[in-house]
Image (cartoon, rainbow, N blue to C red):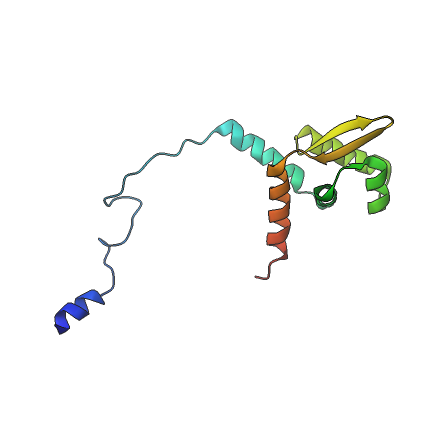
Length: 126
């Protein structure tokens, strides 16, 4: 009986632990789409600037026109426009015209979650 209990408590051996190079499980190669990786890297570069990220955090709440963003962030209009142009070129934001004003919003839910998760992760204690 003692032998049975001691066997049950023994540490796993190499044969018992999962391995990338062997074992009973099947390996399925992962297909990596190079163009999707390039596209994602471009999106991350666009998100990588603190001033552009501030714009995205504001756009998380609602659509804004350029002048509202400039006033809220106390930044010059040309600087805001340049940042928005970069974000739009990477399809991170989209725009719509209403009369003389152009309103910007996040492109979709993926970008919204990406921004929210990134900021929340940065705010976590380590």
